[in-house]
Image 1 (cartoon, rainbow, N blue to C red):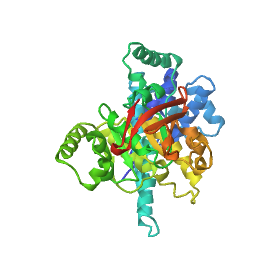
Image 2 (image 1 turned 180 degrees about the vertical axis):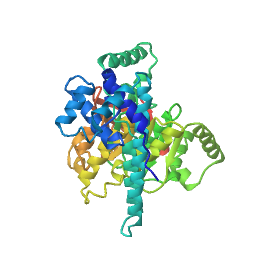
Image 3 (image 1 turned 30 degrees about the horizontal axis):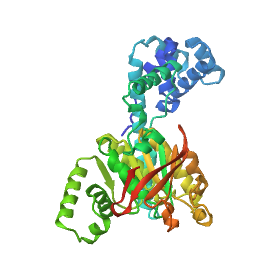
Image 4 (image 1 turned 30 degrees about the vertical axis):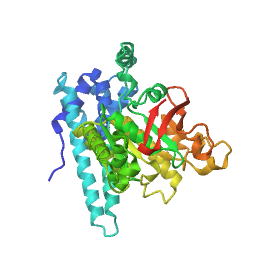
Length: 430
């Protein structure tokens, strides 16, 4: 069976670039030389791009001379083939259509090649199925992801002014999705697409409760996916119902409920069922697997916010040889890349090192982020949690959690406080 290819479209694009050089800028932005199937077309395209890059005239004569100087003229079919391409060209808006066909055929060829490699690995008795799936997902993602585009200043200004006008008119779209907390939204400007938001703290500070509060509130107007690698869906749902139904978590877990409390839980469940949130319940995943599930969700129903509990439980690269610092650095970088490429907000919980325990002031700082300084570099926003009553029995701040904004790429750092009600796993604006 022959590989997918498009002779006519390749000829149409090359011919148009020779006969009408003004289309070169558009084509160069859409295609790479390896997108072409035929070897002679690859060589012709590369030479056209070279002439274009050097600011030289593109026509059959200059192209033939350039190819001849490199000893390639006969390999591409001779000067007569270049003339045939030029003479058969038609200048129209169909150039983008033909570029898309070429790109589509290239994508299909790559899918076939990746599938063949996966089959070889699957037949290998020493291979691990999970690793094969992960590598396959990563390779497939690479070929379907957008490589980006260059924009003119005029285009940048047009889109920027649209966003600024929305802010001016008070529509608020550009401020991002709400966290459900007034103080949080004021501090960070909401949950903006493309951002990696890290919530970090020592154990028992309320990290999971806070992120579930945010996810639950956000799901009223946004589409949310929750990846919990530390708790089962039952444990997670118990917490959500405790908050929504205002029933103590301990009672929900023990089942020792009054009829009124059971009714409160039922009413809470009815409210939660009206919100859009999907929950992953299973083994820990790597970033490629998380990306694949997020892409599927985004294509099916849309996706705005992804919650990960927690970052250090994401599986690392099998090639890292157990270097956890390297693994965490790669994970944080890939999460940021995923947020930008899928245009979603990712909220990832992170552990802090024990360094805070040895200090007189137990308040965390950015350098306490566990395993890697790359988290600090990749994150757009980092919120550090601190509850004084956890360390000081005589604290005057009982039921108070300090939210320390240690990093805010597009805003101010600082601190604000939330009330913490542990019995029902709820944070409340003060």
